[in-house]
Length: 84
Image (cartoon, rainbow, N blue to C red):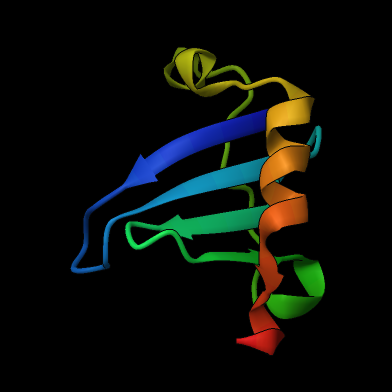
């Protein structure tokens, strides 16, 4: 499943997150798109913890689902988090 979610809470800078999520609700890949246009991509090897972030049965996520091509476009344009 591929999702796009806007985040602007908990004292973090506002950003849009593109996530590829597995059948267990855990992130497989992620792109963080900052308000200034900076895009950083990361994967499981970049995260200390990777708990499930999505309940695939929660209707909250239905309007956040995107086409896989939209995720791939964001992924290909982003820099890896280590190459900042």
